[in-house]
Image 1 (cartoon, helix red, strand yellow):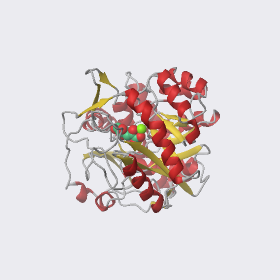
Image 2: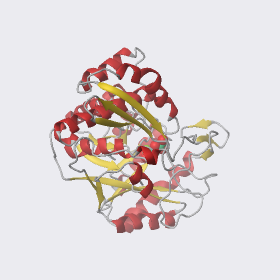
Image 3: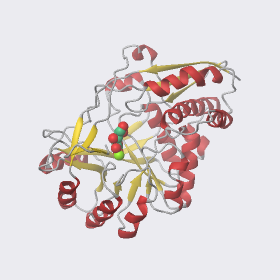
Image 4: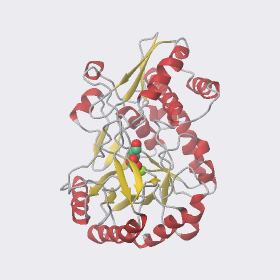
Length: 408
Ligand code: KDG
Ligand code: MG
């Protein structure tokens, strides 16, 4: 069996999804997602210029060998661009493997450990009453877990993932449009003074059963993060996410020594070597990789298995930048993984997105149910894809009040 062709599409409704379609001499095709938020053309170019010319003629069933060929063969290892490109190939090969076996991918991983995967939504408010309204709207929809982000009184600009104006319970998505980044101004002291009380108010309002998550988005130093994690202990968070910039694996020691608040980290990791010390030293509770840019199912499964040895559960990244293809790849891992925790899940349910990526996967009552269709269970409508084109975007740049660049 041979790969005969592979094509890359960039575009989508409100997002530049990077979709890879691998075709074979047996009429079976596979789909992968290489979307790297706000840098989408780069994995697309890597695929088109280097990987696809090598892929043609290979046997698609040898997904492990193909992964090793590209990873080791690149010489310059890791990095989000390369790992997103390898990841898309890997997902597409698992899709093909499942279609050939006439089985959903989760069966190839080891079958179901659970029927549905717990998900969490993003509640956000310009202020506390706005946030409470937003959380209430998700609770009404049946969500059992909600990430909460809140505007901070006196902060010179809206902070991470919160609207400038009250959103009245509507879903708010950060606007990344434009090649020139927007600027956010950040004051750590203001955040540290306000946010523990705000989280406590959300807990008091919704009672003990709601799973509450909060994302610090890499803004604190290890000492500040330790103090914050200690201050929010009475809230009983499901997790505190990205308290410090993720590249310093040692930083997490300080937090662990001072607090029992569960820590989730890893949405910017793209390799097992970015998180092996964190996992082996049991410094985190949830690993937040995305199958999209952690090298696909093959490499992500290695990270999940290592995590399972050390009581670390999964909490895969699921920001709207991931297409339904990689969300499906994650759904198959979620339903299998013995150490599954939770899945971040955002607005993939738009009619435009469903038309571009038809599937039978189902979101119900805050849980994600994977379909039994062979492979990943998501298709791609090339006619629909022709409606969309690439639009450049950027992550905001954060500065302190004196102008110093800080972490987004
Ligand atoms: O590309 C950046 C976003 O994916 C990120 O800001 C989202 O932190 C995020 C999250 O937890 O979803
Ligand atoms: Mg995050």
